[in-house]
Length: 258
Image 1 (cartoon, rainbow, N blue to C red):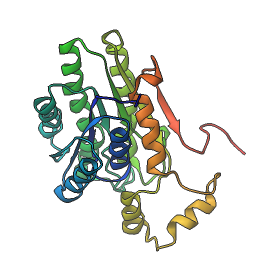
Image 2: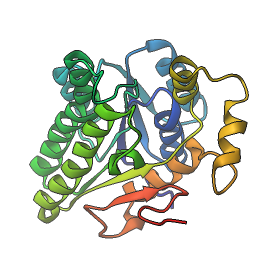
Image 3: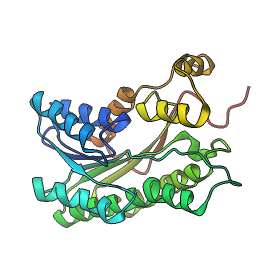
Image 4: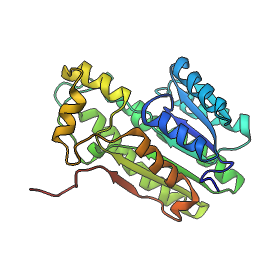
């Protein structure tokens, strides 16, 4: 039986990168999939792809920097399908800033997208699950940088570290409701967004992936499809009773030194 057979899954930030890969993986595993995003073109194209493959899908246009729209994504899914079974928070802002040069505006935007949006999306989703007395699952896509990160990721780390703590707090609060909430601290991954970030902030050329891969233990970056499979596993009953776990999905080992 497919891992997510007949489940209703919302992937916030699902129109590209890890989110889009997760939407595809969830659809392959039998889920009805809704994806949210700011830009309609990639979101609607993904929905058309999933529908053409025989699935049922919905695009919800939303700017997740607005807390009301983060909530309304869930509301839209519940209105369309009568419930939400699984939520994936995969949207992320990775623009650079250090402790010394980050403006209040940049800091607030990181908090809005990387922490506040997942908070209020989870609030709405868990409220539906608890209200129906039904089990559910949430996966928050975080980052290995939440452990400390590079100096140029100060506001990003602040927000994502908050999301790691929120993941554990919410999981503890709702474990008796049979709502399981977990997170993934993902490492360096080859996505469209990462390509744009490397070019915009680090002057990277067309060979940046090859140069990066040469410095990594496994000789390559992570792939969105690999993360997506892990997310689907955590969403599914196959992951058992696991909740409150923030798993390091990375090829570097935290705390280990050469």
